[in-house]
Amino acid sequence: MRIPVARALRAGIVAALLTAGLGVATAQPASAASCPGSWYPNDNGDGSGIMKAGTWNLKGNYYSDCANVGTVDGGERVWFQCWSVNDYNNLWWYVRVAGTNKKGWISAANITAERMTDDNGDGVIADKMCYGL
Image (tube, rainbow, N blue to C red; front, side):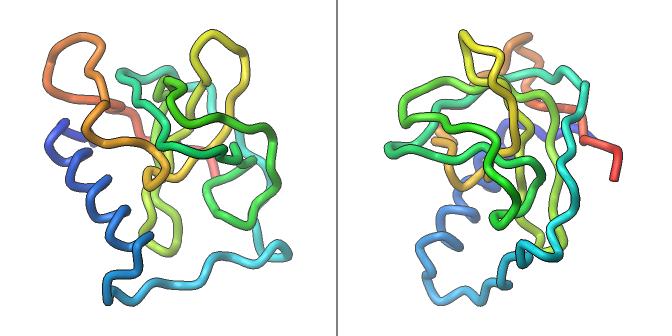
């Protein structure tokens, strides 16, 4: 599956609405006990994004209660490796922090959708879905 830029922007907007709690019912995150083990894909995707203001935890898997494996600060660029959607229908990106070797999972809600880039100009970002679990 390929994610067109417009769809990625919509996903970011939906994630922002869910994060803001604008009357939309949201599922509870997985508990730490039920968090799948750490998963680090080897895929290399297309595109990047800029983190929203704040300090965000990179996760070992695509659930908010999974173990932290690093941090990324607002304004930093992250390179998209691949994406996945968890059991709660939340979009997560497996990313590498620009200029570093830091990699991990980050919720799409933490990335500024309007500042995503398409590396090769084909109108599609992160065309690779992560497979493995």
